[in-house]
Image 1 (cartoon, rainbow, N blue to C red):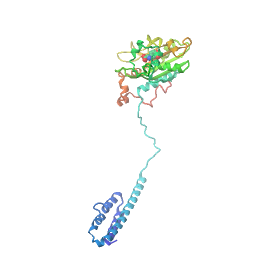
Image 2 (tube, rainbow, N blue to C red):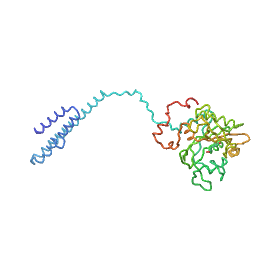
Image 3 (cartoon, rainbow, N blue to C red):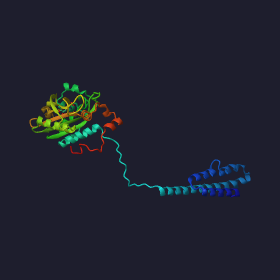
Length: 355
Ligand code: DAH
């Protein structure tokens, strides 16, 4: 290596040794190997060297370039290792610290009502049953004593699906009552069951949604009377609305699948919306003694077994309990609404008090 190259090498070695952090190191790297770097300049000038000396000069320059490049790289590794040591010496984390509790997510009011209904009737000995959303005409209507052309069919605003073969078209179930039939066909009496699920009717305004939820109850036993039905529903309503003396009225009505049938009203004040006080009545559910023909359709002998049943709108009781006037926000997924009306999943409720 000629003197000028040796001098450059010594100069750069000294500069690298003086660079004590990565920033200074990078400045040295650019000063040597950068576009205007000293070594880059020498390589560029190689063309000006007389031809007879060019080979020798070229070899010496390459040797210098290798030496400088490896010195620069190894200095970088040293500096990085030193920087890491420095960080590890000062940084401290304590993995045993507890996380800061922060709730995300709230229970939707409909889900909360369903949990409450299940807990109350569960405490009375009812199990939960389920059925499909798409039902045959027979389960949704026929077996429930609503034959073709029965006027009650017109009230249901049914969503029909495409028919298969000669069968009547299947439907999106218009009520949870078909699960009564499914339960009686698969389970011998006595039966104590409730169904909570989605139902569908072509209806849409502030108090109706094309998809909504119902709760259905079915009790089958020997020697059941209207008295049992009344006691069961009065207990449920007073517990659910948490009003011990809630007035409850049973009013004669008609459903094809029950005989006799009764609509159930609770006392409220129409003007203020307050439940349990005032002279007005509000219809809240439908009920009755299971029609002997419905029992017979399911192979249950009506001379040996009686039953009572009821059906109730989940949105409706939720709106009444929490003073909501519009049902549409239940399904809007508006986070502001959910934050206001949602339930803290950790807060104690009647569910934890064993009802
Ligand atoms: N299925 C009826 C409806 O959707 C509600 C109903 C009334 C259900 C009386 C019953 C009952 O089980 O006994 O309007």
